[in-house]
Length: 427
Ligand code: EPZ
Image (cartoon, rainbow, N blue to C red):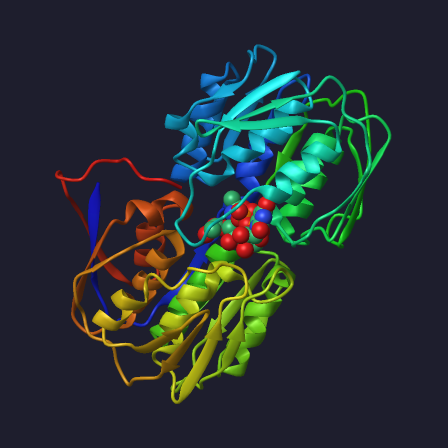
């Protein structure tokens, strides 16, 4: 484990290439297990969550061959009776996708209750509701979820709340169900669409992904294919916010600009000049940032996964901004750390009031979770002096080579190993 030492104050300049989307990869890898023949997955981000997931499925008997840093072949032909133990599942939230993916193939699957960033209660009642409606019997005991199914039958399922995880999980389980499954009030995130596109490329029959009604006609078989994961819009947004915070000018390559509309719209509001191309954007920060108000929402609204980084940026705006968290009940754990850097923030339930300050100043800070860590990094890049950032393993779960990428844009970040820390972290 290591700490980052960030010498702030340098405007970011140059270009950065965005990696594959973490939240698509962690669903597509389990989905690949559903095919009868191997799939080649390209543009896989080289991040800790993917390494953890690959270790989990390898432990279940899948054969994973790494062709290069970003390409893996997944062969599930030797997959055994699936039991995902606590030690593995506690490390990452997305281990719950193994439930939906594998119950479509095996009569019984046991998965430990998932871990994940500590940003709220994170119930999985909607996953369970959907799976039960398809005919899966589910029981939970000693932290393990046991799913049993003789036969899965398509049906209509209306989610009580918009959930990315439940939409994907139930979509996975429906692919081999008899008849048609209709998911209503489905999540519309780009990674939901990416998983559906992947499954369709294998032979699934899924219509409507990207809208709030998804129709899945059951099929009998899926055949492995090559598929390239979409770019990570949250990583792209984080770099845009880094450029803004340091008053820089950067080009962000390998992205789908329409996935970033909610972000580009807000950044234009506060003064950014953004030029969009087919698969890249250029962002030029203004001299002075304006304040704004934001509420995080399911896609296509402003993403909760950029809320902490946006608060870091608005700390440096002129005037007062109000940022409301519309998805998670406890995603302001980083606020105390940003205050240590000189930000003026006040949390009131799900809202943080951000009173802009002219500058931030270095201090030792600790990342409480993945996106909060990214927010502290954005703030540190803009702060004067050298900030020591602890618990960066959270950041490395979801950002590929973040130090190398920021340093490629002119940032000064030094990684110093901390031998006293263990690698036991949840994802
Ligand atoms: C996914 O989490 C992402 N994780 C999260 O990204 C992201 O913040 C979140 O979607 C929202 O966009 C992965 O894709 C692995 P949800 P997920 O189910 O699927 C409530 C990051 O930083 N809910 O869409 O777990 C829930 O409490 C991570 O990359 C229920 O009530 O989120 C929340 O308030 C953090 N019952 C809301 O729905 C359920 O059964 C949205 O959660 C499920 C969810």
